[in-house]
Image (cartoon, rainbow, N blue to C red; front, side, top):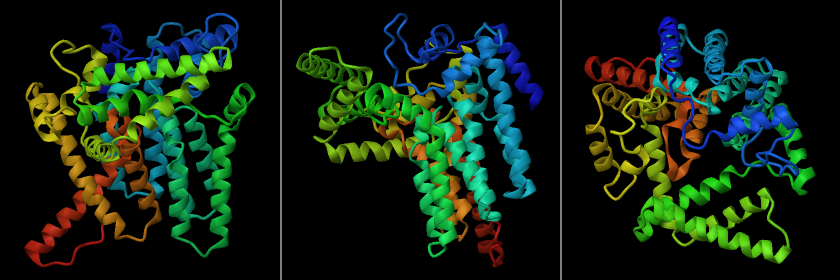
Length: 443
């Protein structure tokens, strides 16, 4: 498996694969500015406007690579491959305390071969660098539940806080983890104290970034990514169902609204809006538009949730290697239109090659067994499995209507484990039905 990964890495570099997708070039620009001007800004000359859309973790990672003298962008791919293998090693080495050997080996093989792990090491995106922090955080919670030492929860909180500086989507996950920790030991004052330490460690890891934003904008502000996503993705997708607009028409409509409101507020205060104020405009416009169609927004969110569970990741691998760029339409555009989830997905799949089709089938089976695994977990008094399950559903649901396999990448390994529990439980139920035996407690 390692040889296969190294061969694919070598081929990617030799063929000069596509390491940049969509709008992820600004990560490189931010890293260049950190190195050249020692500021976190996209401005190329003074005064440098303080950037608050991207968070600093990944640009700092890119900066460190350049500080080592590794200027060629393909060095990023090489280092990220090493980071991903570290992620797999952490799971295999420390996971043995929490999982049985058979599951550990199967899951490790899955992590080494699954398309998302092969694709995102090749791309200038946050996912690969974020994954070890998320994994350490979740495993540390599991260690605490086995050996209740507050130091494990401190490590968990700090790891997730550091991860939030790389990928802001994790921002509210510690609150859900805290609820699970407390619900399974509601009357224990030590559990309340340790959970407080967990949350304090989480906030302390983010505090330098929060204080930096407070210095510039007078507010403990974290990131504008949620405002941007609501405005430029959620609203156009709702308008597709509500008003029959295409996604591009919805995007243009929102952009005009934001431009008009920004010009109005700028005139009122007598100076251009700061980046943070622009994100405030995006948030306000998005909330106003989404409030017009609450029922449709909820429907689109539910559809996005189910799409997120079964999104194949081979599409990112194809994109990285530059394959079939002209023949393949956008996955989001194809299956989120008026044809509906299943009709659009079927039409999309029929256009693909057999390897992609196999990935689609595997993703759907994984989703089915993961749902069965969730049913099994909710019947168990196992707080760690609850944390694992809620982490999976958290990342799948966070993008809402946007829904894309990329958002599931950090928890793909956990998703596989949840599906494994569902598969084993399903096999046990079939054995009971056929042989009349008692269902073994595999979980």
